[in-house]
Image (cartoon, rainbow, N blue to C red; front, top):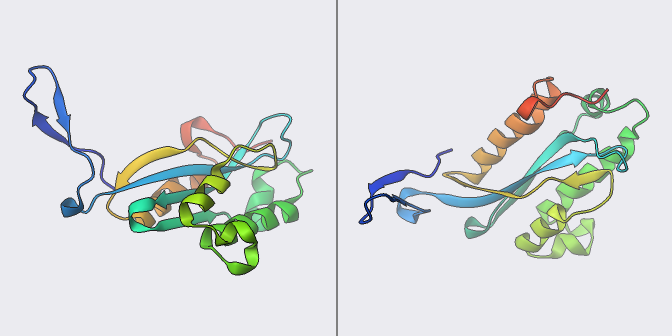
Length: 166
């Protein structure tokens, strides 16, 4: 994944020109958010369990989540309903994939499905803030973000010092 490059000095003495996405360079703008398991929504404590990436210009919408119920159980408090959480994650993946049997939201265009997945809610699956990025491959960005934010958590070395819930 590449970051925005600085293309040198502009015509103004103290400013720099930042080059945006350029089809000739293969850049793709995308939005992403981290899905969180919030076993007790009233406490606000969470564990990252998935990442959703949407790149409108290339019609890309995918969600990567933990699928192993044992991995989820190891990350969450013992009183968590792991089977219910797993079914919620399965439903979120089906909606992102646009599966016809996932209900009416799944039939909406990708931008609407992304908005639905990332909408604020008070439930055991919540979404963190939406962030922007530039990449050459949205699929590669999804894998990198999943590795960084979710699989790092699974191994006990999550982002920004997060630790698995007790």
